Every structure is written in C-alpha cells, then in structure tokens.
Amino acid sequence: MIQKSSSVAWICQICKQPINSGDGFVEVINCNPDLGPVGSYPCKATPPFDLGTEESDGVKIDDLVTELLQRKPNIGFIVFHSRCDPHPNTEGYSIQLTRAET
Image (cartoon, rainbow, N blue to C red):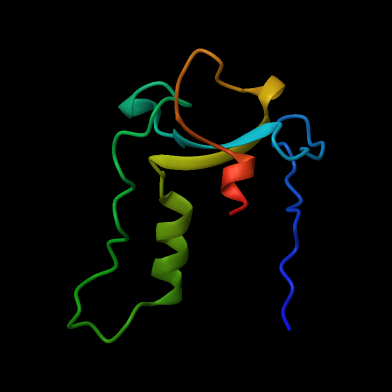
C-alpha cells in the first residue's frame, strides 16, 4: 500500500527557512518588467518555444539550449512565509500552502 506523506517540506525562498503549514504561500507572479511590476498579477503567458516547424527532422540540442538560455519567462512561482512577502504592495495570484498540499 502506498502512503501519502502528510507534510510537504516547503522552504521560504526569501529567508531560506522551513515554512510551517498554514504560514506561507505559493504565488504565481509576473516576472517580466515590460508587462508590469515584477511580483504583480501575471497578465500574459510565456510564449511557447520557437524551434522550427513540424516538418523538420527534429530539434538540435544546441538550438534548444540557446532558446532556454535566452528565454525570458513572463510568469514565475515563488514560495514564502506570510511575513517574508517580497512584493507586499503588489498582488500576484496567491495560494495558501495548506491548499497547495492537496
């Protein structure tokens, strides 16, 4: 029988300390300053990779690595204690950790 762990080890990305259940958030945020304040509500998805057409013979690893290194995501995720909110004057999309564990 498979047992599900009742606790998830969340670490605050700000203070690097463990987060007790109910004392933190996962927040989906805007990461692109061209679209608005970093940390604000995400407003535009990150575009898909542009790696050629379906008719090509595949993707070269060099092209994939270059695309990954040059990619600027519009949306990011951050986990933090309630007291460590890195963007207190903005509102991203927040999920309490107690809900994120389910």
